[in-house]
Image 1: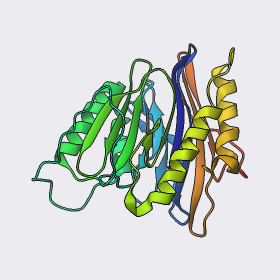
Image 2 (image 1 turned 180 degrees about the vertical axis):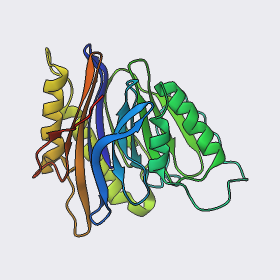
Image 3 (image 1 turned 180 degrees about the horizontal axis):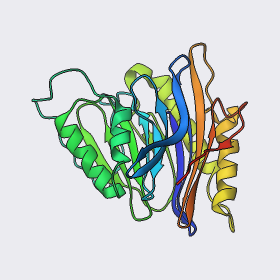
Image 4 (image 1 turned 60 degrees about the vertical axis):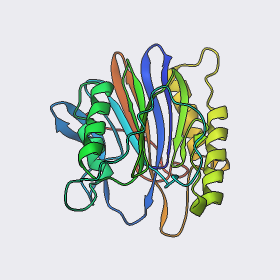
Length: 267
């Protein structure tokens, strides 16, 4: 998944509201969202190749979503974080290959709070090998962002508001890799345009904002609905985690040409 836009602690009735496009190889198999765990009850789509997921939530109100991270260690980082750890990867690692990032998301969805999920992710990064990622963990009380470039991690808290996460970073704090400089700059520009378009309007409801977000991430003018020969936007998710219940709408295809449908068995 390459674009995530979410509003945290903006709407009184829904602390976490998110719209996300997943960009992936067109031939990689996946299953639409359903209940994939019972204790806690987790609703998420599933990557059939590795068994993990890229987005979901549980019955404790914990939301987790991930994007791949383009290697930006060669780029200068800008901006300061509220909470930055800066730990280096230890020399000793579990033998074997890298673990699927989707399995890490699935593990995080087994936790009872966003803070507990973040601590689990930090422990995992101390113990096992993962490719780079940008990871959002949020509930009614906290929203955290874990950036991992394969060597160094940074963990920070989001402030209340609307946030946009893409492969090169979030909210104007980007690491543009030299090897993908043109694409990275375009992605950063697109993220800024999306953020400007989705600032909350006076009197807007969570559902109204999410409907507007669905239009934005389906509109090719914003550059986040992707169509290439063997790669592109495979699906799109709309998630509202409310104080009185949650709603998940899913488009099993690019949102520019696929209708969103309510997911069955929601929690």
